Length: 174
Image (cartoon, rainbow, N blue to C red; front, top):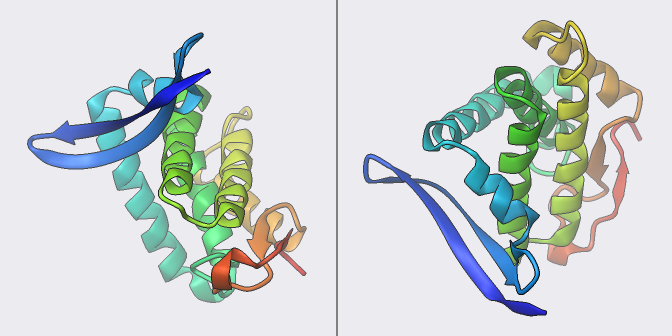
């Protein structure tokens, strides 16, 4: 019963902060990603993208200890877990899942390889899950990410280049 798709774009002070392409159907209107994206305040979307940049910087600075693969490898898996964990600590589970899911759905709509989005969503979920626990802090989040990497709890691709989207998902320590 799909009626089509709508692109939701968030702007702040004339600068595009993010966008997502979502399906619209007769029964519910926007899909889950669309409603999740709309649930956020414009300032939260801006903060979410700032946290995303913080996570990228963190992964680059710590690449030697995280492991190779800033794209589709251990450092990338850690970056996604960190990004979503920090959003969960700053906001709540629903908002962290809302922005991260809308972001990944946009990648799928833009013809990004599906295996990369599946990998990212799995690692996002780890960050949210850990950060939503009692007594979670930035420091314990970082410790948990290192533990997860070394205990196969995060997901990476068999080929970091993911030529033609052909890489397989695998645990982070294999």
